[in-house]
Image (cartoon, rainbow, N blue to C red; front, side, top):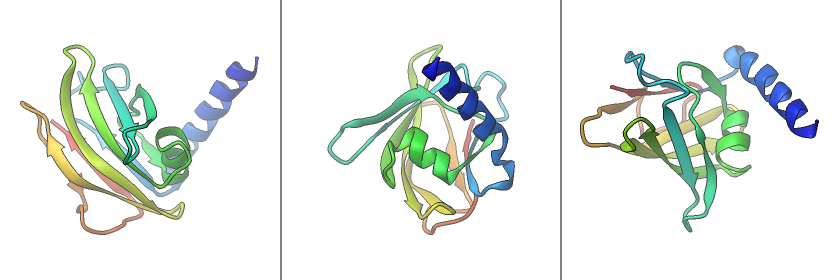
Amino acid sequence: MKKIMGLILSGVLLSSTSAFAGLTLSSSNPEYNTQTVKVKCTDSAGKVLADRNAIVGQNVAWFLVKAGFLAGGTVGHCVFTYTKTGAEMGEGDVSLSGVSEGKVSNVKSGVGFNVTVSPDQTAFHSDVTISIS
C-alpha cells in the first residue's frame, strides 16, 4: 500500500511540474521515450544514486531531479542508455543550485547519437533541455 501511494504521489507531482523550473530530456525520435531510455546516475565515488527509466518529453522540476535522480544530493554523473540495444546514448554531469536552477555539463554523445544541452553547459539556468537524436 505504501508503494502504491508513493507511485500515485510521484505521478501527481510529475504531472504538476510544468509551472516549475526544471530539466527536460527531449527527442524528436519517437523511439526514444520513457519506456526505452534508462538513466543511471552515480556520485563521485561511483555509488549508484538512481537507475531507472528516464522521463522523456516532460519538464521535471529540479526538486524532483534532486529527490528522484540524485538521491537527495546536488551533483551526479548520469548516463543515458537506449534499452532496446543497450547502447549508451550519452552522459553528463548534473549540478543543482538550490531548488530553482541547475546545469548539465561535460556532455558526451554516445556512438551514433547526438546529445546537446540548451541554453548552455557553463552556467546554472532555471530551465535546461537535454536533446538526444
